[in-house]
Image (cartoon, rainbow, N blue to C red; front, side, top):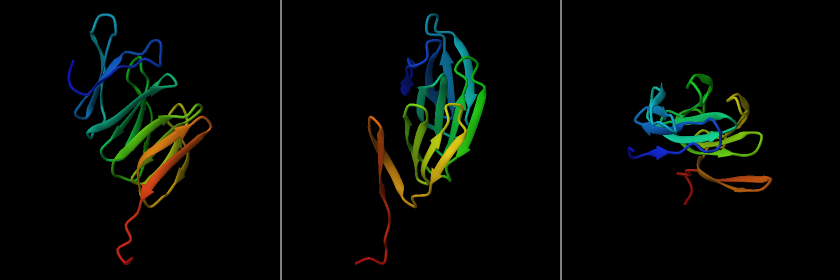
Length: 143
């Protein structure tokens, strides 16, 4: 399988999904046949499969929510541009850490809330019942 392959295991009917440039390609897990191809319109940088959905983050800051069976888009949000560093399954929601802040999505990809951190959030740390993110800001006037 190509570099960048990801295995979809959190949905019983989930195909094997791998990334190739700006496309996500789903393969039947038994026969290896191509089921669907989704073009995100920008380089896909992250993937998460949870809540009977496939979530893709692209290099322009969009998060796409797809149906794992046919690849149709259920929803899409824009994080304000820049890279999405993490997609995290947090029970009843998906947490997104990005250059534009921290976002929470419903399982169908709708925006629940957004927090403008004015910082790059490279990675969240997760514990049961707690999600934290560490961000960095630039302070050019500080000596």
